[in-house]
Image 1: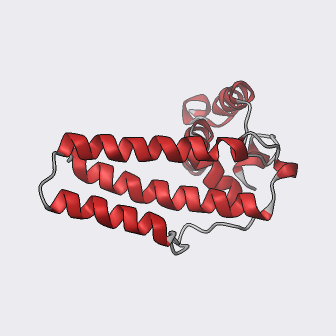
Image 2: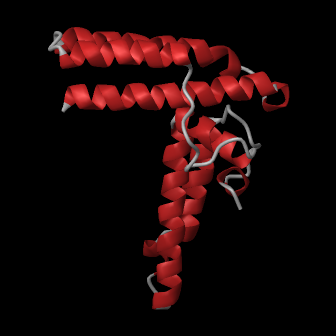
Length: 163
C-alpha cells in the first residue's frame, strides 16, 4: 500500500494538507504505541514501525518536492536509485559556478546565485504543479524529473557553501 492509499487521498501532485493532517492524527491515535501499552511486545513493535512509517509519510506530504518525487515513483516514472540526467546547458552553468567557487569567489555572492537559481527552478515548475493529475502529460513528467535532478544538484552546492 502506498502513502496515498494509506491516507485515503488520490495519487496527485497536490494534496489537501488539512485532510492529510486529519488522517495523520486519526492514524496516530490508532497506531501509536502509547495507545497500546497492554499489547504484546510484538504488537507494540508493529505499532512502532507503523507510526514511524506514518511520520515519514506525513513529512513527505508536507514537502511539495518530496510529494512530487513520490508521485513520480508511484506512477512508475521515478526510482530512488535512478541515475540523474541533467541538461548540457544546466551542467555548463554549474561548471561555471563550481569554477567560481574554486577560484575563491565571494561565498555570499555564490549562495545568492544558487538561491536565485533554486527560486528560478521553483517558478519554472509552478505551471506543472498547478495541473490536476489527469492533465499531466509526458512532457510534464520530463519537466518534473529535470526539476528534481537540478534542484538536488543545486542543493548539494548550497549545502557545501553552508558548511
